[in-house]
Image (tube, rainbow over all chains, first blue to last red; front, side):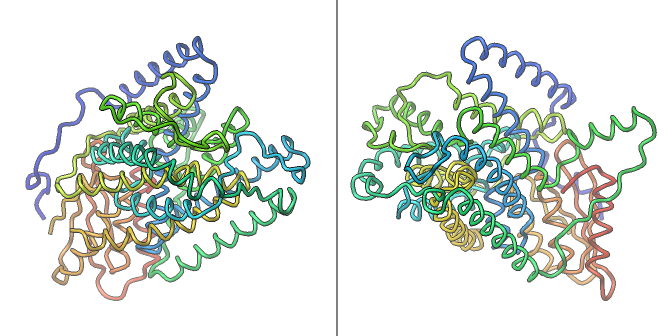
Length: 413
Length: 95
């Protein structure tokens, strides 16, 4: 075959400076911002670090929640889902110990502060379905879209606009949802029903069952989908070993399981400091702020102070806060990680249809995250370790939505 | 044959590969151009399922060429996967 480069359309040229060099510059800038944030507000600087770590982990391990649901259904590939289940297991172990300390006797009726224990009801099913379809159409969930923005995916930038629009639509319909349904939906915390031990045992058992189900689905595929890692070349001396380590962390992508475990630990760290990970609450305040410029801001939201999680927010708060730095940090962390690995590239979809697909997927995700009170992170990856029953309603709805989304993309050119 | 899926993200690189392989003349190789790192795992998987062996070459920052060649007669998917993963390890890419 002839060289394909000659036949293909040239793409935007790569950056004139070496990417790792730019990565170090960006890292230095991130450090400078850390000092700046620390002077203003301690929490903002801590969440800047957590956001950077969040984006770094997602980019390095390519941990994609949308892909986890989609690949299981589309190609019987469960590697990403197993990685997420591992992260959930780790986060559950940590969250449950921490919550047992916060609320020693759950039978009295108090909920652990900041835990993502969400109202259980039909809104989770509708929100999960919309979100599941949307994330498959948009090629990534909300956190996936944010980290791909940092890697240079133009399609994900379009999806982000859709997410913001969808969140604003959700904010405008929130009060209706609250009055007819969410207002009466109970906050069900498993330790209240089963005690701490029973809740943890049930959650671990359910995670194990989910893991076995994934293995069963995978076993139906022709050849085994597991890549065996090859032994690294022998490292002689400290310098070699240091280089090998640097390569493993910054250049070579991480196995998905390492990413899942790291994200579970990061989530625990975030909760111990203040609150579990979540991304859509802050995005909704941005969308409302933008809508306000057009005179379309949402009315005061009913009941959003009754529970903790990725509740919709209006755009009337200040700019610099912990959740703002988390969000921007996620994009920046993925950007830095991509540069250090020489993987940054402006990736422009060539089919016009993709733009519509990503925008539409984003709108569905934004709406689903608005009424479902969170995305794959807030209402799933943080709610499940919070031992909230809501996560076990939201997750199957996500899966069902992803199934519908897969049917749609199979029919798109 | 050449399949240029640069600009596309999951699941399209693997889906396009699957479709293209089905219409390929017997014995013809397929070159897939991609700039989506996760495709380095999904495209060789798709190939291996249909009896193709994959070779991966980096073309530049964030760009790769995956060459899929039909394995002569009966093939051992496990052996094919091992050869692909060995090549990925050489390139220091974890797919």
